[in-house]
Length: 450
Ligand SMILES: O=P(O)(O)OC[C@H]1O[C@](O)(CO)[C@@H](O)[C@@H]1O
Ligand SMILES: [Mn+2]
Image (cartoon, rainbow, N blue to C red):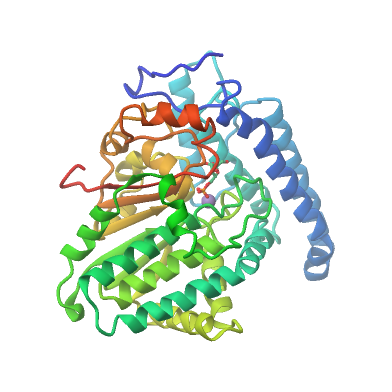
């Protein structure tokens, strides 16, 4: 089927969808999602003995029934069956089911909302929520994180890079004893870039294959510079430094909407540490996921675990960083929160209406950093935008505070490019939007509309 690139119902481009045969969305739904589901089933099965040891026969029953539900979903996906309502009764169940009805209305009566015919963003999110449903319907294993092993492995495999980064942070902090604006900017820029490129280390794009940081995250920065397609870092810096008063009285609050656990999370924590210790920010709020999500995304458990592991490390600078992070949390300088909206399929332009409390929370920030590809897809609605359309246009009114997306490209949506830039990239490197090789730092402020 040819790409239908407009959608009269929205008067904005239509959503990326697996209905476009051969598209990245199509290949993801056809190949990558079933592979992820098979791995989830395998993980649960491999842990059968642990379930038995912990919960006895009940644990074995739960394992069997969860696998049966997941296998059923895998089959529904492969045969493009209709998307069905959720049957658990969690906090967000009704909202998911209302969302399904909304999509059913948009698609009309002739066509069911289904895996290959409906928006990719929606069905992909739905798959992760259905994994959760399968577990929830089978206590006692409802809290089991099927992606935990992979996330821990990715952290341990990046150990050397983490040590390099913590050692670098320590050096920066020593240097800051006589701070100059230029130095501060240089350090800020480096750590922002490290956090940006940390986003290459997700486990969803590789369908759960290991994807750790093995080289020095600082040394590789200059060679990566040509792959940054839009670089609004100077505007991020202006936002931070204009709210900065003398160090002791700075009021600036930065919110970081986290993406992946493992190395990427460490890069975010290091950036957050720098923002506070340099006096650029007074408070950092981290936003994570309330259920395991897109294979490697950070949950509360991953967040605490990572800090504990960092504290317990057998390296002086790494453990020192961990101790400092724990202290920030204890003092309330840092805080972690989650909200069901982050694990729903909505575009962010729906947030003000569908999660007004979260929108209000974000309005209290001076800057919101959105990490990663999925957040970018939700910021832009995962639509067939022309590459030259402005980032502010694609946000469709979403702007609780000045915001910046730090994203390596892993899905074929990209806005805010120069005329001809996208075409040139397509000629040079046909996979530029999905390989994770390119990145953007895109800023938008509700005041400047930039
Ligand atoms: O962790 P990130 O950067 O949000 O990436 C998630 C990945 O999952 C995908 O949705 C693909 O399944 C892509 O958008 C991206 O490759
Ligand atoms: Mn992710």
